[in-house]
Length: 228
Length: 248
Ligand code: HEM
Ligand code: FES
Image (cartoon, each protein chain N blue to C red):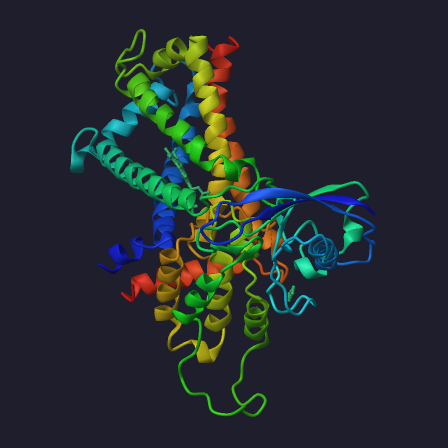
């Protein structure tokens, strides 16, 4: 109940954004490292991405059944995403209403592109997430989807220049989002060691670059013809 | 030096406003921005017009009354109060745009004067200590560790000018509210009401129609008292703890 009442405030909403954002940061880190197994090649031998995908489904199956852990993660991620986007929309409305008359001239001293692109970048990432699930998980918008053959789905799916370019753009958006978002979590949750060059801030920015860069290796290597 | 001013003129709270252009002639580099406006106003009065209304009081950077958005920056380019901004920061021939704080919670009273009562109401919601503290106690009667005293003081230097909200892309008054929360939350006298205070002040801040913080940092960038965004993290943490304690 107390949690619900705090949610009424702008600060409470930001706390929800921070916690749900952090859940997704954790997820994208794991996802990105999983993706790098793509470079171990086709087939389902040790260390391949197909073996990894299989492992994710059998992991814990004695307890929760086949793909049980996977579904659990999906539910947590979906709930987190819905909360994250819902609070983003609410805060966006409040923030937009707070200055009915715009400045004629507007200067900035501190803010940067990542901070200012949080909303539109976020909207773009949401569109990407929907497309990505239909493309690589459900396979409905994939030209030749083969259940379980992740390597094949990647090389064929991302070999299409338009799809590949969309993935790359989305990863730029994700990198920007996390460049501001990762350290923002610590500020929102009240770790008050903040200044513009603090270690937490630098680490968050580095993580954003590693995540975006790591993800981009896969579509880049396919589009440039290194992996087929 | 000679300058062109584009100034927001608005007869009253309900009147539609517009920009008017004025020539500021023979301005000396050592004049303050407000002295420059005084000279322009003398000219307007001599010509039979209505002088430009703007807020000011101490003119020495301590009261927090003055506040203009100059060329898109709250208090202008120097991160000091408007009264401490000198004309030497501008060049002969410049065109300068002067606007009031633009925040829904700060309605325009006239021209460049806005009503910052919202900030007073945030303080009234909890930015004080209600325990009777008697007359001035002996020095060091209450021991306060030096780092806490410093942190409290760094927050207490807020002069309440409202530049933070004026500069914030979201029109948020978080730096102001957080400065007061952080000030009292670092001191022993502030402890009994610490968590109830933060909830009441944040709720009041929201009710006044300010936006929320998204960590742009523009507030700290323009703050003439150099208040750090660390105070906002402090507020966030106190609100989080208040929530977990069920004080929300
Ligand atoms: C992979 C998906 C995503 C991840 C990993 C992610 C992560 C984050 C993180 C860590 C934050 C910082 C929270 C804080 O300020 O304390 C954040 C803020 C934010 N996110 Fe996301 N997010 C994602 C998707 C989205 C989507 C789909 C939207 C949709 C509109 C969105 C909109 C926002 C906005 C508006 C903010 C607040 C901006 C600010 O504080 O400046 N995000 N996100
Ligand atoms: S007039 Fe007092 S601070 Fe500027």
